[in-house]
Amino acid sequence: MIIYSGKDIQNSLSKEESPIELLAGSGIAIGSFDGLHLGHRKIISELVEMCRKENVLAGVVTFDRPLPLYKHAADYTGDVSTLEQRLSLMEEQGIKFAIVLDFTDEVSKISGHEFLTILKNVCNMRCLCEGEDFRCGYKGATDMTAIKYWAEQNDVKTTFVKQVLYHSGAEDEERISSSYIRAMIKKGFFSTANQLLCRPYELDFKKCTQRSEDKLYISKKEINQVLPPNGIYRVKNESEEEVRLEITDTDLIFDLQSNLKLARFM
Image 1 (spheres, helix red, strand yellow):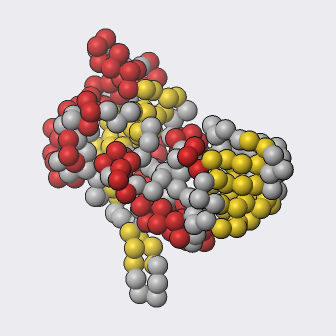
Image 2 (spheres, one colour; image 1 turned 180 degrees about the vertical axis):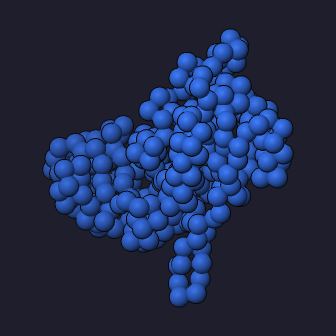
Image 3 (cartoon, helix red, strand yellow; image 1 turned 90 degrees about the vertical axis):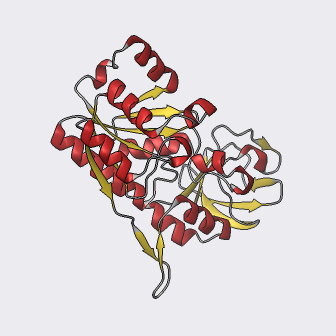
């Protein structure tokens, strides 16, 4: 996967030229894609198919951290997936490039039409695929109707994917979302979270400081991902070995003395 930063996009704008890989055109989906759950996977699948038919590269525009962190910081409980996890999962689904943006004040104030025009100019965007509730631009003012109008004026094909629902009870239906999955993890409901993620929920420790005494300790303060309630869990490490994990108010404590890269909740 080719990764572009916000700086790469600004450089391309100033030079009025696209990265050479995108000269033939691209199809794009925009979003945080936190977790890459079933709903995200449907969007990605539709995008990849559109791009195959149009013979252009499939790509995403995403952010260094999920947008709810910036928009609802006071009650944000953590990321479902790290950026590295998201990019890896999207590559597995057929995404060829990603533009990773920092959600700065400057980025947050760009209008939806301006943002889409930048993508058309820099990435030669030929098609756009989003969920039907997608909004973009300053304060989310540009909705599906406005995007369709812009696309018609700019010869960009669009597909809007219907919401994917989950039957959470005998009769209840819940829209699959990253926030719903966060809530399930916070309650320790891993069977539901894993089903909606199409994979075991996984904590990534590669960037965490790990101290080893008789056991392995990782401070909660170093973990950006959402955590389940304090308690005892059986998890699997990167070698698929079962490990005992205790979560306390301050630490994650493993029955290990060597560092580990991840913990999967089964």
